[in-house]
Image 1 (cartoon, rainbow over the protein chains, first blue to last red):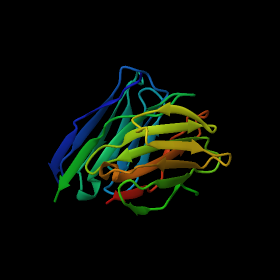
Image 2: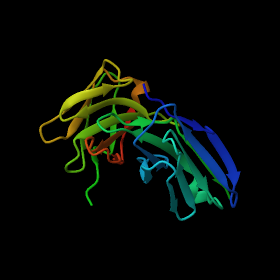
Image 3: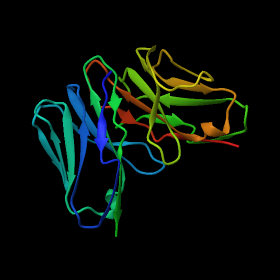
Image 4: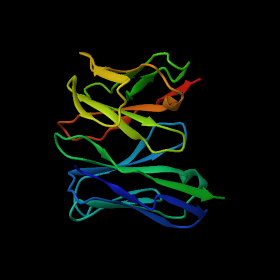
Length: 110
Length: 113
């Protein structure tokens, strides 16, 4: 069974700070996705990474896929209150089901 | 672009009643996932379907059942509702064979009173 772990589970920071959240697995995934979910809404896809070592930037968010395609990180620069939400990573392999991590709950205080 | 459509958006039921939630995946998507998210909790996987067949089963209670129809839409049927079933129910779809991303619907908020 493929499992994804995320850390930290909870994170509360001040506006303007930087942060990194991690998504780890003992399994290899052919692709990995990051989602952000706001209260009462469905998870919204932020990015997909497919190549080991790949780095993608989305404004103040930087996503990296590990060389071995078993882990990923999300770095947020100068966090803003609008970044508050539940960040979920999910791994996928061809012909197999999606696997979600338990999520990191981020709270950015003004 | 078309997104995953869930209906209804909100549903209020009494204990012991039944409820049916519907999910219309993005066109061409052959896989549907159902998730349950209680207040302040992470989404919990319930069940998934690929090409109209159940492909994986998570923490779905025996009181719940689901199916995927020939047009690929899916329905989650919930019977003998309990107060603890109150939650957000999300549906997601993807093209499994192409290993594409999954996209989520806006969810159905079920309140059992």
